[in-house]
Image 1 (tube, rainbow, N blue to C red):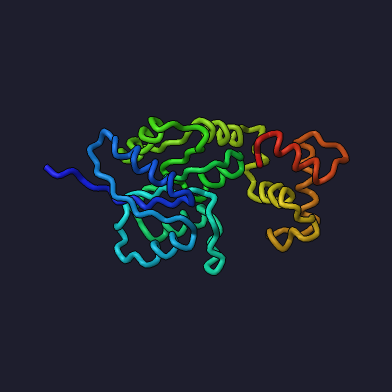
Image 2 (image 1 turned 90 degrees about the vertical axis):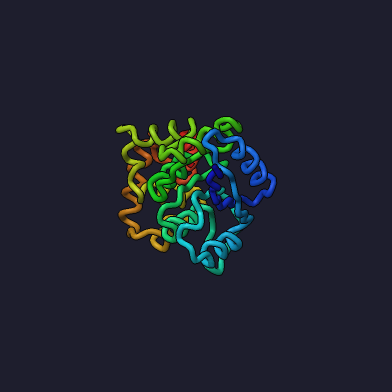
Length: 225
């Protein structure tokens, strides 16, 4: 009996990583053969996705978050590609692999993409990657330890403030150096509403009379950004 071959779209800007993932998956205990279509940046991935006519061409996608962007199509990261893949391929299983361990990033990926797998690269070994793959192929969801801890921390009642999208956006914009007066260009809030939210954020961090830099510093200390 011929074993089923899984078609996997792997997107990572390091070819050696793709080869490593492919090699590890060949040792799966589910009897699957592995056929990999590689992409090394947002542009090549975008072209593969948009030019593939068969909506069931891929069984799974491995996606790195940090990738060379494709600005022409406004595809700036693996997260943008994941959203595109979800729309194009109705039953594909998405696994996100990232070096980012920031709680806000992981929480937003879980909420916006709802991947079957979310793995922080510093967390997993070859054995855990294989375990994650097999779990996902059996319709389970797999998150590595850092992901679980970060999301659970944000979902704790005392951190409910950070489940508000605007508050997270304000902190992330501050971390990028965006001034308060320019934030309405990025989020649908007026200056007075932004100032009120910043005051709320400072209260949470126990910052009295502090600056934007103090907010960013405390957010980093908490591992949020």
